[in-house]
Image 1: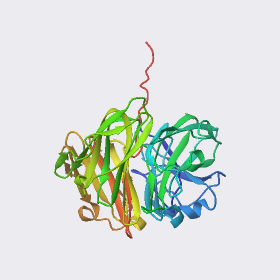
Image 2: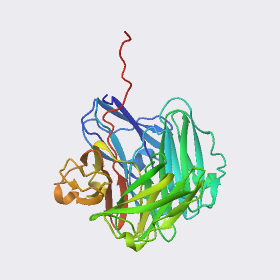
Image 3: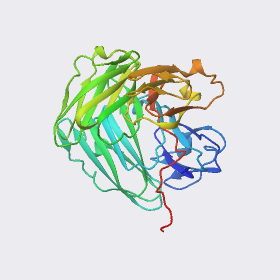
Length: 402
């Protein structure tokens, strides 16, 4: 059925872009905590760019946006360059809605590599979550990670170093026990590989994981989390412009039970555009990171999408490239770009479309395609995984009893 209302929380960056697939009836934004209304950051009939940092003011806050309209597909994106204390990197991330389970592989809790979770309660009743951590050595005793309470209408910022300090790589699972909570993750690095990225929550552990958007060389790593009780043996495949191949050195990546492993991607992977497919005999969660030119981008597994995925363009983020991958059967997007099976295609939006004065691009797919938008600005980079805008939702089919 058509979605009647969307609600999401925005935090973690200086800029904000809000909009929708089709015009809606109404839209509003309020601060969390506090509940104060914020004007001029959302409009049900057009796309709006605004200063998120100014709207939030000081302290750990989020902006909760509500958009109403039948099938309007309202979304928001956090954009901009963060300060030096948070990696000095370009970020482009989707404002999350309610999440039941959020999985991450490759965050950290060390001084130079820190992950931060921003938890926003979107309802008027208290919410409770559990945060579980894994390191390369095994499960981590996350002090205070069980039964985290987020009060009604409030925002809580959790630095992973407060739960378990000193871990350069972590697997993370945020599980919603009750309430309606949005979960955003910010990954920052201030070490030799400096940068910032807003990381999308990934799907539940799977035996087949596809990470779209690999491009460039730099320092490239793959993080694989095995939350199970049996050693996982995974092989890595590259889906490039010319098809699928197995790079040397990644034919078997072993991940011990209840741990996360990080491996360097060899030069045989190539410099893209490409996607990585991780095939494992046990369910795993995986992500990849690319650190180059003083910034960091993260590739997530959010699955393929059916319908329209919105991509912000213009302003501080410029004109991104799309990297579209068909892991299985051949796919075709709405712009009539063919994606051969088992391969990746790069689309330069600035070449195929006139983006003058445009705030967003709608990328339609009938399924079978995963993709990212790759942004570069001032020597910085960011990756945005493509996900369908919330136009419709599955509901129970109800009819009168005979």
